[in-house]
Length: 390
Image 1: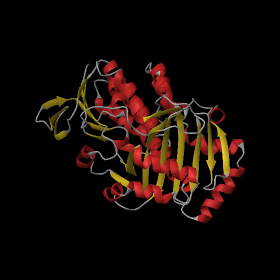
Image 2: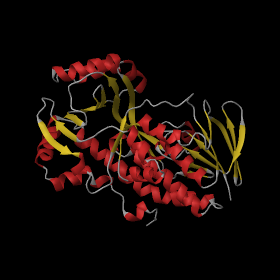
Image 3: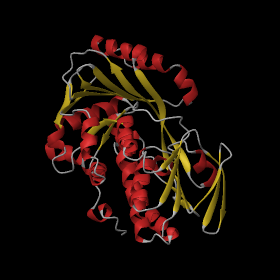
């Protein structure tokens, strides 16, 4: 039976769910607080099962067209001494390939193929929810009302709906600042050959993605509040890496002055139950593993596929479908959140002793050991890939 489904939040998770559920014949409405969608956004690496699901959606060609080349990555000390030089092709030979793409680019690929299939309401948020039996009454910020069989909350890390209606969930402050974006500029770097600097309490990544464009991302341990940090973000960026080479400082100065920069603090969502009545949490709203997991986008896409899978199995019993989704996702969420915690400890060492230990171990790592560090933590079991609950 066709269901009326409201998706609050038109990000990667929300749009993937909308595409899958509308293909099943359900009446899907997406709302989003933004006034429009753009292609802007920081760089992400879509890996493994995330790429596979996009291919299953028939979006391979569009995904490749929007992606950037990625051939090699060099992990460096602050004085440019090489720790490891890794081929992406070799690193990913045992898993589906990775696709380097901006978050906005991936989002646009999904939106472009969905905008004529479902209703998308911009400048709209949920202001009230009343559940009555199998139906949920919704009031929107513009006063409009609707009734839905299921409400999917995919509003991102700082979801206000989760805070109001999933009171047993909480956001853990990772005490790590993220600054990233893109800079249109001529540069001498080889396209597709990336540099990642590992240092005490910080990490800097430089991604030459075109002959006239560079993506920059950095993580800095920081305990301050986000509002204060944003006011001083460019100053913090400059001072944090002031002892690096003239070349790096020149690039960061240009990025601070002319680049498109996104600033946020990393957070991790702990939700012991992703379901509350006729509402279900999806993507970062329910289980953000932080960008430091390396799998945030892929996990959002997988969660959308898992939810739609269980709904397709029991379309007349959404309670059962959402319960199965919750049971499947919980151990997977814990896996990727642990991976994020381990990555912070390893790649953003808290003191000089830990930095020296990491550099020594990582530099001496064999190909098999590198695989354990870089790819093993992002692989799902065959049962999980086929949505089987153990």
